[in-house]
Amino acid sequence: MPQRAVRLERSRAWTDATAYWHMSAFHDFVHRLCLRVLHGRDSWHRRQFRPSVHVVESSERLWFEEAGQVVEAYPLATLQDRFAGRCNLLLSGPSVRRIEDPVRLAACDWIGVNGSPALFDGDIPGMRVYHVNDTGFLRGNLEKFLQFAACAEFTVIDYRTMYELMRLAGDRMPATKLVVYDAWNLPLRNPLGKIQQLARPPSHRNVYWSPDLRLGLAPGGTVAYTAAQLAWHGGYRSLYIFGLDLTNSGRFYHEDRPQPQMLDKAFSNVIVPAFELLSRQTQGELRIFNCNPQSRLPASIIEQMEPELALSETTTSLESG
Image 1 (cartoon, rainbow, N blue to C red):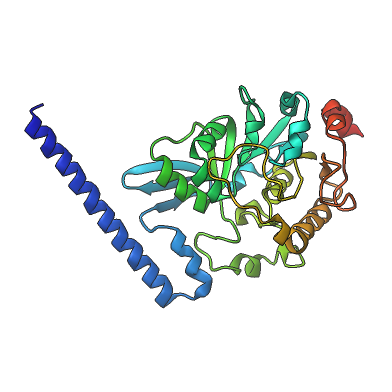
Image 2 (cartoon, rainbow, N blue to C red):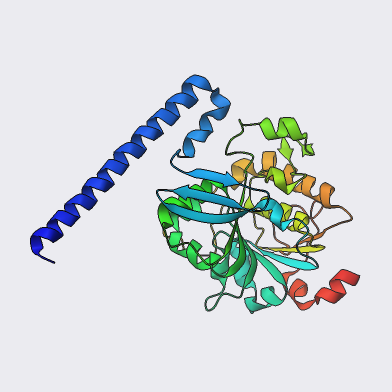
């Protein structure tokens, strides 16, 4: 191609990109203005959902479209009663570094969250579910997110994270079934507090428990709480939680852009009530073990177990015990 034609083609591409940016910025401005003028403060959070993304929903599928890109996903209710037996939940507390031969975690179904699959220095064993409820993790660790999600059958994220994934990853979507849900602290369409008002879900000290996956997931100060709701609704009968340290001593893995931890601030007012509610709502249906005896969470709330003992037991003996 002649040099002049190349320059002309680049100029057109730059002009198209600039025009699209200006149009998107204008739509974003109108969107924010409408939220300010026509809606109350309880809808201002919706400014984080850019209007250029169009969401089409059915009972079994979701489609996200922006600038010609279409991404297919599944509603969270897809996972209702889909699983059975035992599940290991791997968190990011530094205590997991003491686990000998972490591959044993994958002897049954396991859920990884945020950066926790980095515990496997080599090949990551297949996850049943990879769950991220922190958009900041995605922004600061996109390559890790894409790597970990590609190792999971299902990747569970909220709408805000889905919007960011489309913006940051473009056509580099991981080979996983994306499952998208409404986060109660950042709902896509509803004003803040509307889900709680309509559903009247179980609550304890201003912390809620989602009674139905169609409503999304209720926050509880830590990704362990939303993951536990997933495990219970998904149909597991026992849940073994590794790395539930609940301290501000950092995460066991290296972060390119370290995310702030607010555990001290949220521990007494949010996290403790959340796990008390978790214990109450799952009693008799889901056996939960905190596999870190040095955890900040009292054993009176969630039973504790040595991690090596938890990993040495078989699913059969656990389920019949």
